[in-house]
View (cartoon, rainbow, N blue to C red):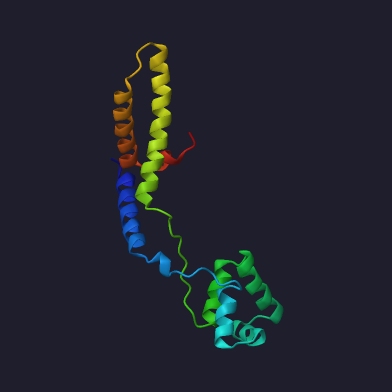
Amino acid sequence: MSNQTDTSAVARRHLDRKFSALDVAALSPRPPKGWVRAIRDGLGLTVRQFGARLGKSHSTVVALEQGEIAGTLTLAGLQKAAEALDCTLHYVLVPNRPLADMVHDRARVVAEARLARIDHTMRLENQGLSEADLAAELDRLTEDYARRGGRRLWDAL
C-alpha cells in the first residue's frame, strides 16, 4: 500500500467520524430570502444601514442578497457580509453517505467492469468461471480496490 493510499484512508476515516457526529437534521435549510437577509431583518437593519456597515452601496447590498438566493454570491462576499453582521461563516459540504461507502461502491463498479472484460475473454476461450467463482472474485477485487483506493479508482472506465 502506498503512503498516499494510507493518507487517503486515514483522512477518509477522520472525515467520516466528523460527519457521523454532525447533526445534519439540526442544520436549517437556507431561508427563502437567504441567510444574509434573514439576519439583517432579524437585527432590524435597513439595506442602507447594512450597506454602511459593509462599506457598500444600497444597490450592491441588494445585489449581494439576490446573489445569495441565485447562488452567485462568492464565499468571499458571504464572508464579508457575515463579518458586517457580526456572524461567523461556517461552510460545509455534507456527504449524503459515508466516504468509505462511496469508495467501496466505486471499487465495486471498477471491479465489475474489469471482471466483465476478463470473463468475456475467458468465455470466448471456453474457460469461463462459475457464478460462485465470479462472485468470489468480484468480492476480492472490490475489497482490493477499496483498500488501495487512489486517484485511478475515479478514472473513467
